[in-house]
Amino acid sequence: MKGASAGNPGQVQIVDFPDMPLKPGDVRISTLACGVCTTDVKMVQKGSKEIKYALGHEISGKIIEVTPDGIWQVGQRVIVAPYLPCGGCYYCRHDQPALCSHLYDVTIYPGGLAEQVIIPRPLAQRGMFPIPDDVPDTLASISEPVGCVIKGLEDSRFKYGDSVLVVGDGPMGMFAMAVARAFGAYPILVAGMTPHRLEFARQSYADAIIDIAHENVKTVVNQHTAGIGADVVLVAVSSAEALESGISAVRAGGTVNAFAGVADGTTIPLDVRGIHYQQYYLTGSSGLAPSHLKKALTLLGSRRVDFSLLITAEFPFEAVEDAVAYATNRIGLKVVVTFK
Image (cartoon, rainbow, N blue to C red):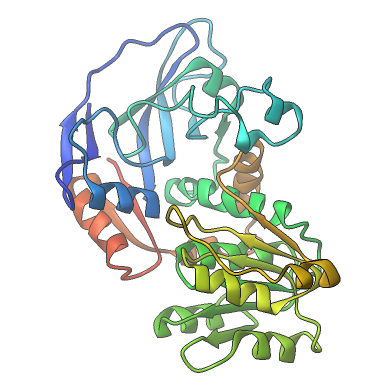
């Protein structure tokens, strides 16, 4: 089975992965759609000398093979989590499954950007969910990033009616706004510096936009929150400066979430006295659990907001390198690779 992998730095390589037999309880799916995310872009830019896996983990697919003792049927459309918390380690027992000590012990093979994907039995049992008939393949494939945002808002103690500031106008920032809108946030503000993305935000999910090249984030947030500040701040930019900007705009007792991954060694100066007296919460959010994936699929099926607006390009698998280039060059928002 063919899959797209990181080859030489900056290049996507098509690889023939072994057609592995299924073990008891495993499931084989034919991939229908797979999103390209920032992690894939970083892996391609870095390159890989030893190719073991395919890129991609935001997938929807159709089951084409099961074993007799499985719980699934051939022909079902499904989404699947890219990894599985063990359920028994310290972090799982403390309801923090995304911190599981064995999070990557069970994963899909070879990866989402492959013609076929094998789902190991534990993942098929606890991390795979049927797609409703009225949810298209491409829309179902964005369940994973939507689920990551749902977890981010949960980690931020979000409540219905909270004001939300999203720092970052990239794809995940837009996903954050869309989920916040679906969950009843008001007002929703986005801070960024890309004109066409800020305009998209204005016309879709945001109540106000902040062009950080010309406006002060804290000042604009205060104008829209009666001088209080934002209840929840999601920082969806890999930048220390962005996190500092988000902290400046949170209300006393609010939450700032370092939602985007940053490079090793990234630090910020922190006013500890401000934390003490303003009593705001500073946290982070990475990944998701199967429960968040299931919630995401339910949300996508509800049509509460139109998430399809976020998918600005689709490429066939034969043009997967163009899809990665589209994401790398930040041409639009979310790009999805489709399979025949």
